[in-house]
Length: 166
Image 1 (cartoon, rainbow, N blue to C red):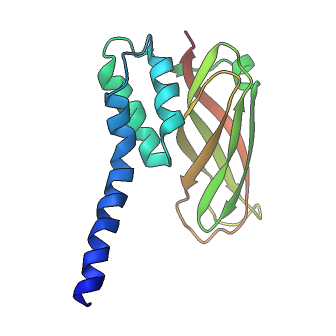
Image 2 (cartoon, rainbow, N blue to C red; image 1 turned 60 degrees about the horizontal axis):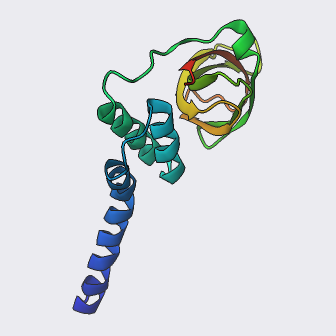
């Protein structure tokens, strides 16, 4: 690699690193949010990608110790107000979730994947997917699948966790 290529590569790498850490820095410099939900909403709106969103939520937990609401399993009624859509490709389940609840923030969903065709020696598995979906908003779902050679699944949302929105 020539010197001129190295000289242009360094600024590119530095720019990429700055973009990756900028959501965490911008969260740290925000004025104090009124509550945890507002902190998460503001932080995740600025975050790009799952890793940045997880860092944003972690930053809010550190910023507001003692103010983080306790997650609980959603009731059957609240679970019924979640609308999910998803599919498979390249070893990943991905999709979307709409939280139709006006009083719950959803923090985790569990999906059950059942291999098709039935009767084969393949394994049915549950996957927990961490999310932050505020009341009456939409979010993304994504989880890497444990590979056992299965190419087709049926799936269902079996449970969800969250907390009362404040």
